[in-house]
Image (cartoon, rainbow, N blue to C red):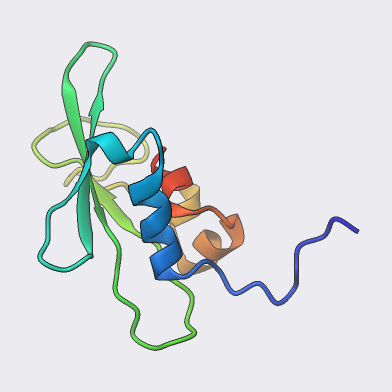
Length: 115
């Protein structure tokens, strides 16, 4: 009755981008940083009032009707440590974006992943 549609193929790339750019919380602090629509940066304010930039790269699709690949995310301009971050400050440990399969199975839109 409330089960997921078994033919679910994931959200499209345009759906992910639209959700990100139109999210009421994220849109005021998000800007495109590439000539195409592949890379964006969102500025967050930490609890210590510092600015933290999250760079989000949304891969282009190689073929039509293929699920959107998970975004890659990094924190440029900082050094730190967290179980989700590698030594280059790339987000690697956040489950929903750790693999193509996990991203599709999460059923999350990009705005939900970032926020």
